[in-house]
Amino acid sequence: MAGATTPYSGVWKLYQPFWKRTSLLRLGVVALLCSASYFLGIWQHGSGATSVTSTVVTAISCDRSPAASPIAGRATTLDFAVHHGSDQAAAGAPTVREFPACDVKYSEYTPCEDRDRSLRFDRDRLIYRERHCPAKGELLKCLIPAPPGYRNPFPWPASRETAWFANVPHKELTVEKAVQNWIHVDGDKFRFPGGGTMFPNGADAYIDDIDRLISLSDGSIRTAVDTGCGVASWGAYLLSRDVLTMSFAPRDSHEAQVQFALERGVPAMIGVLASIRLPYPSRAFDMAHCSRCLIPWHLYDGQYLIEVDRILRPGGYWILSGPPVNWKKHWKGWNRTREDLNDEQSAIEAVARSLCWNKLKEKGDIAIWQKPINHISCKANRKMVRSPQFCQSLNPDTAWYTKMESCMTPLPEVARIEEISGGEPKKWPERLMAVPPRIAHGSIDGATPEVFLQDTELWKKRIGYYKTVINQLGQKGRYRNLLDMNAKFGGFAAALIDDPLWVMNIVPTAADVNTLGVIYERGLIGTYQDWCEAMSTYPRTYDLLHADSVFTLYKHRCEMEEILLEMDRILRPEGTVIIRDDVDALVKIKSIADGMRWNSRIMDHEDGPLQREKLLLVVKTYWTAPGPNQE
Image (cartoon, rainbow, N blue to C red; front, side, top):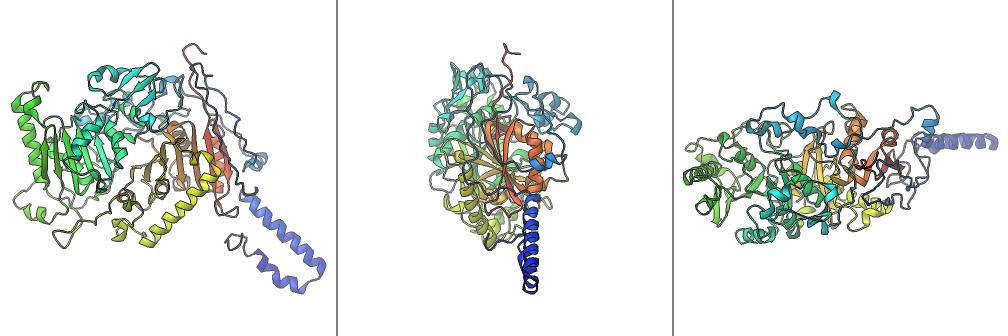
């Protein structure tokens, strides 16, 4: 390819002087040897096929009948004619290891929030509901099955209101929250009316009430976090207003609530405010919300509100509805005394004041506070308000198994009282492509505005290429929940912004540079993750996984098969995987993937066959655990 730089680009120049001095016969011999050397080199590096521009991933027809064949063998619908690495197998590479299916009891297995393991840990402060991952010897080396009768979710936006009962076969919430309009059973489907404990008239009406108190329509609020989210109706209905919400709730405080949220096509994670920081950077969210989430905000020296303060951007809002707000009206229904509720609200108000928050409004069941845009006045007041003191050394963006402390995260220094600490992100949608303040201010190592803009253009090009080799990626509604396993600046998600989908952007804990704050400043969402451990989500969460250099990053940290088995756990049947990596790594990955009921093919880089980086494209085949009447 013209202008390409490859390990072989100097071969012809090396031999030009020799050609000028030799006979025609020697010229022919040398040319033959050089040609052989060139093509042998390409073959050795896994590029023995010509570039394929036709569609390589075709949807596998899913048997959606209740009597679907149990644990069907690997589908052969995909016709991957060229298989890189096949010659390595002929040369004596180990045979493909077939991974068995796990027992059906693991169909909803969440390794790091396993209920049985959690009972070994302290119940104080809900520590037992935090992440407690299995030791290496406890890891399952089998494939998590879909439940019998599993069907592909409804496409968005129909999925917001409807899900298949067989996919999440739990009726507990339909009984427990029957009068609050969370969820109903309708034959073989669930219906989500959009209700909530504090908004029985529906999430839209409740959001309208908030919008009358603070503007949700001027682009200044883009990212939100919902603590104790239920089935995430608040976040689901905010999406139509261009507000992207990270919803989280503990595993099974109500049966399968986060699983329902993800089945609806709404961003959500398993998580809890307990003793460790939430896995988000400082100054991430424009708005935080709690609707009867029953978090004791005033206890433990106010640590939970201190944590909300850490993840709120300067000028961000905290919204509380439910106990103790409007207790004078509701105290009898809440089965609590007037004195108890009054004391709780007074304690919350005191913690908020100590954080220098300003209470903006309290109307009906909703109270709203605002964080200051900088800490100039707040620092001056520390002589009078001595608690909490500002943290002295803890990195505000460190949030992976990081213990909470009773100190306040200081905002970046500013020169003037009207200046916004850390810089102000532009309003949505301009902020998506604008240089984020963290980069503009030089606080991210090696990230300049020029590097950021180049990365943005690079991912536009790459997404364009992906859509030529994966035709489903260009089909509206084919994918809804996407995961970028090594998101860097969030360029993958930004390039897909016009499609009806959302992306969970992961910054691995092994990454050299922490860029998650940049992702939030762009108006996207994400979390930290160590890919040597399981993710805090249910099986079959995502429709598409994107792994850019993940296996190179974790090469000496854990086994490939451990990461691949986790990817299989969180990927839906008929879901797609795109793995970008060095060709040698991809050949090894493919040898494992071929034993996982995946159909895969190695493809050339978007810049052509001479690049060592290649793509491994995968489709997970459809299979389920056997039904009750099947062997």
